[in-house]
Image 1: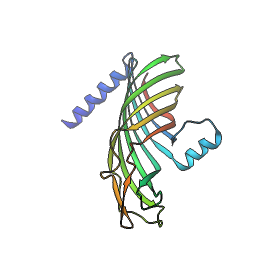
Image 2 (image 1 turned 30 degrees about the horizontal axis):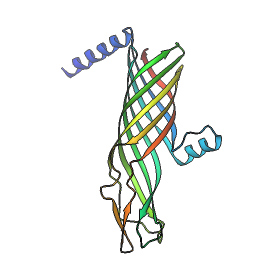
Image 3 (image 1 turned 90 degrees about the horizontal axis):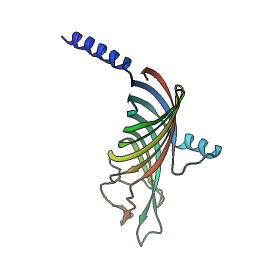
Length: 213
């Protein structure tokens, strides 16, 4: 019975791939994250070195409507200000390895056969794989961790040239990174600047498998 269902699913998928106005793509991408977009070679090189991003993506195109889930690994280092009258301007540096799972819904608004333009928007789930922190007050590691899972949103624009893709998206936090907005340093309670984080992600990708459009 399971084999029969699998065969039927394959046949259905193949027929959909042949249908006019339907296509699917599976690919890989690499890129970097940055707080500010720049075309300077030094800034791009620094982005790849310090905030490297890599992952896979899938895309379903129905007419010009797009569904695009992605799974991205990235590393990030963030600096938070700690507010306390008794300690002079301490900061907390949080270094993380993360997984991001965006699910984009969008529209392909230009199709010139070899070149296609699109825009997407959707929710993003962030998962912490590993994290360490350090405070510049006595260089001590603090007993504080960011939430293992947070929510965000993203707006994405992209261009496809043959089998290659370029995407630029702006993601913004929807949930706080920390459960608590305070931490104790040297017996002093400091408030964490718990601002929701926003960042740009630039990726270059290649479609490894394509069916239909």
